[in-house]
Length: 349
Length: 220
Image 1 (cartoon, chains in turn purple, cyan):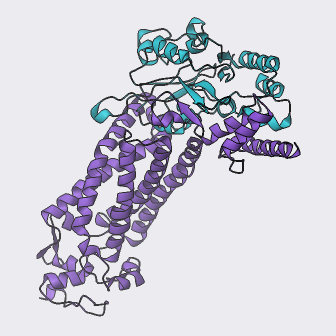
Image 2 (cartoon, one colour; image 1 turned 30 degrees about the horizontal axis):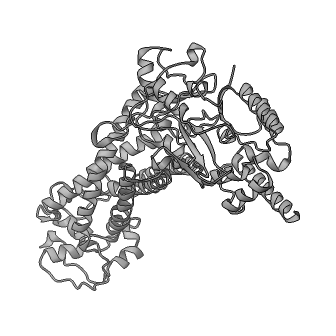
Image 3 (cartoon, chains in turn purple, orange; image 1 turned 180 degrees about the vertical axis):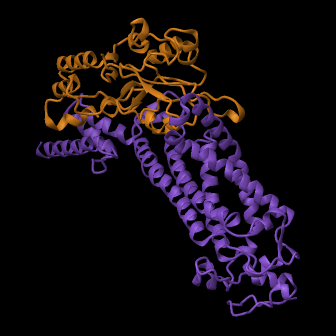
């Protein structure tokens, strides 16, 4: 009997702990409670009619069945929803939002201090093909999807705080409905585009020895020095692997989980997928701002390659010296670590 | 002003699903949606089987309301959590956040996308004019506006499911627990939905139904 009393006292403590948890930020799951089945059986012996132990199981999502057939609704009280709410409304919205603002401000400050990166030499008028039409199409389909997804995604996470107070419920409700459907329909296309894009560009984005020099000199971004590179420098490779490939696939796969809810996912799967998706997307958007900046207002003529497919020889020499050399039919060793000096500027040819 | 709450007494629920049927019929709920459902705990275990009816609990700090990207939820003066289907976009976030699985989505449109969310309204309709045709089509009957309580509870054959003013509901439940000499305080979901420590009858009821300190958490 003593041991039983002790066991009951322990239940009481666990209950108090559980109760205390309910009021706090992250409720639920009193992990130190005794194993569920044993607890409810013991309680049934000592105190018939006391269902406290049974309902502790409920909080853990155990020992339940239901006649309604939806798999998600087999849980009477799901506790992880509150945790998801706290993370989504807390760090993801607040830190994520300020992170995007911070990156934007940092780029604006960089532009103000460093200005546009101009060509040093005079343009020759002679052009080199940088991206063929398939590559450009792959880029702009992916980029188009990305922009649509980013804008609609931002509307769904931050619109409530930014747009709703301006637009009112009716107009914003309509906008958010458009955003949601646009997001859900564009998502799968983005995923397929990502696979195609990665396959297309992976070969020229592998590590090359001269990339070490780029890292040592931080790409010359601050000094203004031109660091030689092959077709893609290390900055572009970082964006390709960490941004487009890793974050793209993380966001793409988690997005598909959210987009097709009828494949047996339960709420906990959706909560996890949503958190992975939104964190990944915020990091992806932050990196993309850097990519968009340097490809447009950040560097003179950088956009030419993607716009027309061709770049001026001067641009090629200054920004991708080894690639320029090979394009001109000269040999550069693959192992070159940056000691190779490119031939004279194209103007002097 | 009354604060409306639901309470289900597991000692009385016989898993007849009468509440589910009453609700579906009264509101002509969309196909595939069940605003109320009956859950059985320890199904088939002799002496330990408990059933209870659960729907939207109209929480005091409603998670659905907190996560909605379009802020389509609102709370009436009686504490009933309602939503505006014209503003809802069917994103499903309220369903991820809700502890009770209350929000549901009829499939509609391209690729079976989620339609507008549907959930228990405590028989209080929606933002449209009380008792209007538009209100009925979107949200079902507005019984509260007619001075009636939710039909699920009204039709419960064993009066396991109680709906109404929190003070009344607490008093009825407390009375029952005292009379049947039970030791349980199994008002499942009550504190998840309504929080703890309010100075009104909730706490009085909780105290009355929990004689020993070790049971205070039993109300969950």
